[in-house]
Amino acid sequence: MICRTYSPALPLSHFVDKFWLYEGYAPAHIKERILPDGSMQLIVNLREDLTRVYDRHNTDECRSLRGAAISGAHSGFVVIDTAEQSSIIGVHFKPGGAFPFLRVPANELRNMHVSMDELWGAAGVDLRNRLLEANTPEAKFRTLEKTLLAQAAGSLTRHPALDFALREFRDMPKLRTISNVIERIGLSKRRFIQVFDERVGLTPKSFCRVRRFQRALRMIARGGRIEWADLAVDCGYFDQAHFIHDFRDFSGLNPSAYLNYRTDHLNHVRLAE
Image 1 (cartoon, rainbow, N blue to C red):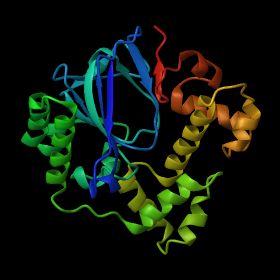
Image 2 (cartoon, helix red, strand yellow; image 1 turned 60 degrees about the vertical axis):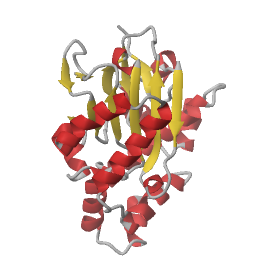
Image 3 (cartoon, rainbow, N blue to C red; image 1 turned 180 degrees about the horizontal axis):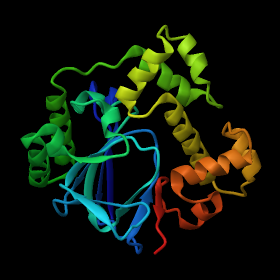
């Protein structure tokens, strides 16, 4: 299997975490849960011009999109199949980083997958064609870079209050309260929530819950014996019961089941058939 990543140069590096490419990914399981991490992704299926997103409650049913699609910020897991991941490339945006490229507020894409042609028109269709024409991973990454720069049309600016809030929510060992952050920003609570929601795609409260859940996943990934009550406290949960409630909300599993079904990818969980 080929797994390549690329970090773009400025100014895209302010908005993009990484570009990624998988070739030859062929796990034994058919479907996976993708867990929320508070960010958005642009995903292009290079194997076929198709993206399938399955109903969480009835995974025999799915909705089909074009092969190039945007995955909005999610407040719960989504279900995909692994066949279309055999040849796939994507852009993992930083939280709030997709906003300049969307042409719509990010909250309009919350908990959604949307074909890129619905956002970019012909350019959304052309993106996949040009990626197929690029013969090397490096050429494909350059194609993504050029496309994003063209779609941003020079409007690559980030809201300073949003950036401050995201740093605070990310860096605090136990998440700083939203009220603490608003007091230091100079925006009204209503205006701050509006800006955050429109650019990140989640409300500040939902985003902080997702990031706390992600902190728990990273601690689990360290390995070794897990004391669930201690982990809950270390991640900022009131108690173990609140931790388990959030874990089920975001993954559809309790923590012990997650251990049984997780894969090598932190946010990809094998779906039991």
